[in-house]
Length: 198
Image (cartoon, rainbow, N blue to C red; front, top):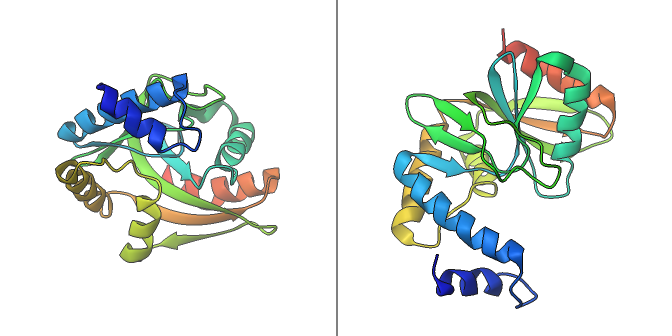
């Protein structure tokens, strides 16, 4: 990691001061760039497995993905296991594998495990829990772009976009609208997770 990498990271914050978090973030960007060579992208979301099948719940920071996944853990019980609660790695080859890594969120929920990915769930807040499967590539692509680490360097960015393209036919995508009650977790489990793990 160079001094310029750290300067770039600091310039992206509003403080203009160097903190440990900027140093870690700059280092993580370097690691993420290297992982692209192995068809692995860094994704923003809370990942977990149920019956050895992987899922990711993703949303903008603060919307409630970790809260929803915590409710899923409570509802599902022993067959639920965290992979990574913040930045799972997605290896996209013949199939898609979720890998954990040491950066697993402020709650530090994660395990050193990997498993096949069954579905990505895009979460929004709503009083009434609803869900739908998404098949529209343009809609999926826009949602994926906002949650995938994209490098600054053009050639590496193009590589990341190519890996994202490969995701389309290798997993299922859902939109879930949930509140912070256990009923939302029940809906997500009964309507999506249970069907995907049959």
